[in-house]
Image (cartoon, rainbow, N blue to C red):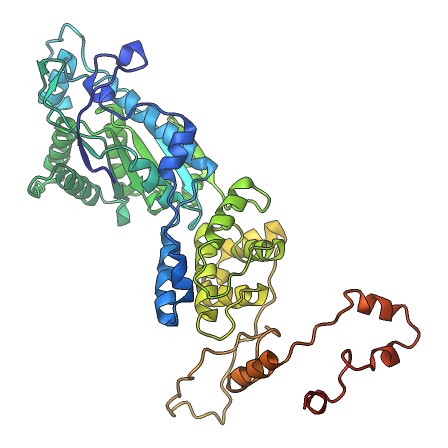
Length: 479
């Protein structure tokens, strides 16, 4: 993350942006391919760890799954909207303009009547709204996109001219407060500005009116580029004073101070906005889109699952087959967070078990461990209905009346068997013995199409009752 950089000025593309140090200090415009590379992060596999004898060491590496960043098509759209919003907001705030000097030095309600020769300050700002279910990758995407921009740019001189602006805060991100408290939001903005600029924490003003004026002045002198507000689903447009006050405050940031906003929220925030045309129009002025779980046959899903699957710390490499890819989608429904948790739990379940292959049954068991609560939510069940993907319900184990729950439970020495997986020993105490026996013999069927030939034979059983094909008493034959 590039927190703070010294200003490097590059001539802006648009003539109306040229000569504006706030815009010319921003990162240069680049192609989508360069952005994709910048947003990508693949954690190191350290493949030699897969052969580590201690399973606890390999389990520890599973935490790296959370750091995987596979850019989706939404990343580019999000970046371009934010890039445009920041530049539009700065276009009316050239620190070399008398209009901006007056804007910075006077509160909007106390602005003198004397008009600068360049005219009064005219705010230019829009609001971007991003909606998406939990786990679709909204927060990860915002972090990647915002961190492409420096959070603070330090200015000294611009082409030989001194500048009053010393620190330009390009962006800050806050969460929408509970109960729609204007004071809580103002204090959070003030804290984020202090942290970004590295100054001692500012004491918030005592009254809400004084606090709002304090916030206005800090936003101006730091030339805030965009304010990102997450968890906006906490705001509900009721006929209460708190929600209306918070909305009025946010609208004043856009309409009076020219600060672009980005709302990020889960549903039903979109339904909340659509109840009022005025609120909806303002919320989509700079762009509006919804992030959905990935589609089964989309390129985004294929790219993500392939990169995720490569991060295996099992001592047996399980290739990603169409069956396993399909099973992962059926379980996760294209939800990135659920997908990562399922895969992490699947590896954790088999590491150190004696058989570290991953199959469909392992993934199903991992799902019920990692996503037990998500599986019960209305959102997941509704999505399953829409996609026509349903999983068999499991019977919950119920303690019998005679069971004594007061007795201490003994901890098994080996990991429990994976229910329903017929490829694994269901009795851990016999597992190593069975593997030893299997390792002692090598009895391949020489004819690859033997069973097809037998299906056409009239004496199928008699045909197989030959040495090396069918063993009626395998222990006696192996002696």
